[in-house]
Image (tube, rainbow, N blue to C red; front, side, top):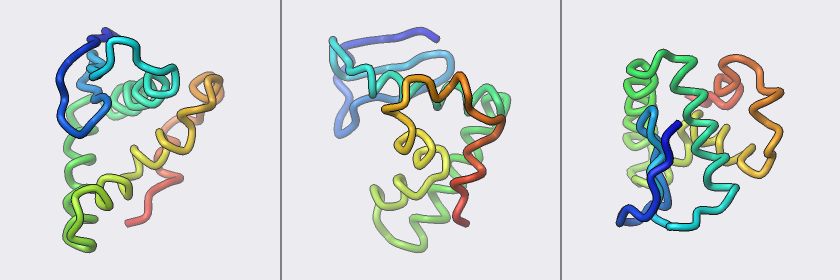
Length: 106
C-alpha cells in the first residue's frame, strides 16, 4: 500500500487504485485509511482487474435501478462492507475471505 496525501479530489475524500490509496487531506483520519485498506484487501482477493470490472458492473446495475450516482455508489457491496467496518481497526485481522459477498444485494 502506498499512501498519497493532499490530492485535490472533487467530492470524495479518498480513492484506492491498487496499490495506491489517494486522499484529499494531508492528515487523513484513521477511519478513512481503514476504509481504503478494506478496498485494498478486496482488490487483492479479486486479483485487482476483476475487482474494477465487478465494481463498475455493480454501480451500473444500481444506477439503472435508482438513477442516482451516490445512491448507486452506496449500494455497491464493496462499499457497504467498507463503510460498515471502517471504524473497526481489527476488522482486517479477522475478516473472512471474499466477505464482501455478504453485502451483495443484486
